[in-house]
Image (cartoon, rainbow, N blue to C red; front, top):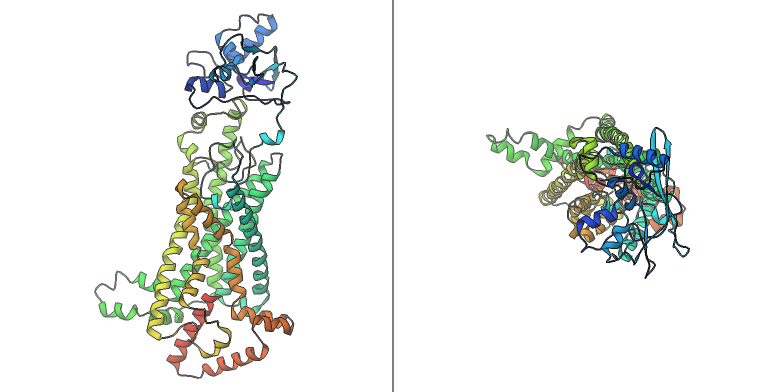
Length: 559
């Protein structure tokens, strides 16, 4: 049974398998008549509601033979026919014609009845056709649109053709690996958060607090992604309120994670005194000697460290920034999304559910609102918990805010790595030789390349690759690879935190002696490290300050 006019596109159970699309070489007009349920009437024709009233009145008076051209067209578009030779069922006579089944002897018209009812101040009419006995029925689950989206697709809009749910083996493998990476990352993040939060020695410094905040945000983003993509796709019944909550949480937490990465980048620039250089860039033009003196890597770092304010108050300010900035994008997104949904819901209910046109949506919302609509959990797929509206909405509410922070982090990464190389050249120190007291706990592989690699993971350099690859369909493989790296970012950060010398010493205090040997840490080594650190403080002021600052910086980066 198929609806017509005001209820066009509504299909009541049971659903029958039929050919409802024309081949690509078919004429466009015939293809449109075949694939759409609701007719497109010329402007001079009366409104659809008046035609529906005419149909009901003619059915009541028994005047079924004189329904008129437009009502007959509406009925033909939702009346299936059968090919008498092949017994193939077509959605309507136009679908049969575009498949070269045009003979009146070959086309078998099925007996049908017109049923109308007045519900909620609207007349709803249906065509009920008597189907053949050997008809094939559709599986109900095959008609449900997928609500699943991958981690690598968060910077792109879904494909227009949602009916094709077939996936290649390559995509299935990527999805499986992605879920494995997300699961392992969540486990590693939980361990790292617990260890750092329960140890005053690890959580007291500002880098430790910031690392805990970043890990908590990444863990929450992974959980939100699991709920928005996995859980919503698993549900068969539409649960739109839950879908909207998950979508907003995912947007909020992803933006918050990018903001925390940007805060890390800012702190690194402050550590090296580069923010002071940027502030005085315009003032140093006439003072070349002062500029040359300030651009010394070690001098800039010492001056910046010496002028740091209280770390607790700065961390509180960072938390406020990491909350307010994402909310500035999420709140307008939610308001516009719900307002557009309320405007489009009546239009969807009174039009072809599966074929309602984008032009009708734009006419209903207006050009500006139509483009800014994010499309969270739209009326035609209420369980899709991510952007599915116009690409401008994705650009304004997610791509631009995240892109600004991502490329700022990339810029900071390049500058800081250059500054680390300059610092090494000026002082003649390296992470493995800067301080003798940490030789027993520092691996030889802790080179400048390793430090910059860890910085690249913390600052999310791979996100820039995924963002740029999402702009071109030809770079889908690169986007998927970057998505896998980004899904494992939290796990890599957690492992690097747990592998730091301070974290291993904390774990050694809580684990049996056998496990301490496996970690390469012993209590005697810990005590000797503290004694050597105390004796190192009695050195000369300048040399001690240089070694302390350099060692602290490289240790915090390495963690």
